[in-house]
Image (tube, rainbow, N blue to C red; front, top):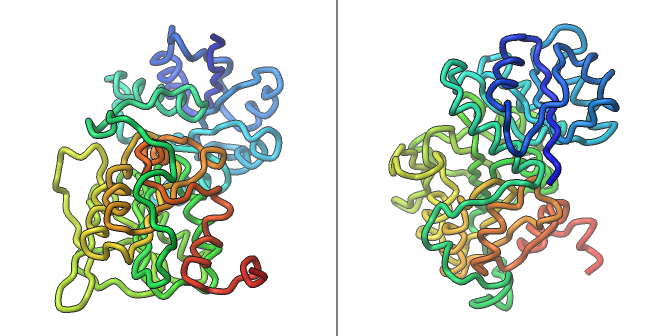
Amino acid sequence: MRKIRLAIVDDSLFIRKAIERVLEGDDDITIVGLAATGEELINNLNHWKPDVITLDLSMPGMGGIPTLDIIMARQKIPVIILSTHSSKDAPMTIEALHRGAVDFIDKQQYSLVDFDALRNVLREKILHVTGKGVISNEKQILKTTSRPVLSGHILKKPLSEFKIIAIGASTGGPPAIQKILENLNPVPKVPIVIVQHMPTGFTKPFAERLNSHLHFPVREAYHGEILEAGTAYIAPCDFHLKVRKENNHIYHSLSQYPEVSPHRPSVDILFQSVAEVFGRYSLGILLTGMGQDGAIGLKCLFLADAWTITQSKSSCVVYGMPKAADDLGVARENIHINQIGSRIMSLFNIPTPDNKKH
């Protein structure tokens, strides 16, 4: 099988050599080019013919964002951003994800002395964004016999009295989430709670970018606040987000427990709490991402007679999390990302240009 062709772009010679070293001799990946600037990459793009690119954003000359724009305009090669959660780099990273980058790695998370962790995360992301990754079973329950999507215990007709929308995503999630939210016009009069897998320092800039681009408020959730209708809340990194009901109000609850969860925040934990509080009045949506987080949570929603949607394989950057739910047969609908927003509007009986005709 042909190896994945990787091009590395970073103005730091040390970083370029470190990545080259950790992937040297890899059975699945070969490095076809090292570039110190965006201009150098663009000039060699046709010669190197990379299948995937790692791209630094803070570089002299052209810089990372204009380089990304040219890549996306030419070939839409999968690009993994190498970034830090500094006040400068985090917003640029979020912008890059919305401009077409498929994933990112926070360089501050990994020691460039101990190469094992860096090699593992690089390999995993490269293999998955190029469609070569193998999804491992994170939960024993997912080893049960799978059922095709839209089978089993299915509601014949969705409720129109939804009281909450819950969304979960990972790799490829930021632009997918924005695509959905920007198509909610007017926004349904319910709270929207969102888990997007991100490391420390990136969820707040993500919420701020969405807030600046949308016609309704989006903010990072904080512990103990009352959920407001028509507002979207982003789970902060390193905390699980739950909803709880008390004195006829719905509150956010943030916690770092359980610590054994593969992800924090966890889509599973959010969905499970939504199922417990809202039951059949919930709308759960599981989007693109590596792994299986959210599949068990979507099953909880499904069994509570909530309406459940997964993103279609053709529109996912990585069809991992939705596939796990589809294999369990707990998605009532499997929809292309471009249609999920309008589908939400129809479920809430809100007229739009698309559904006014029907």
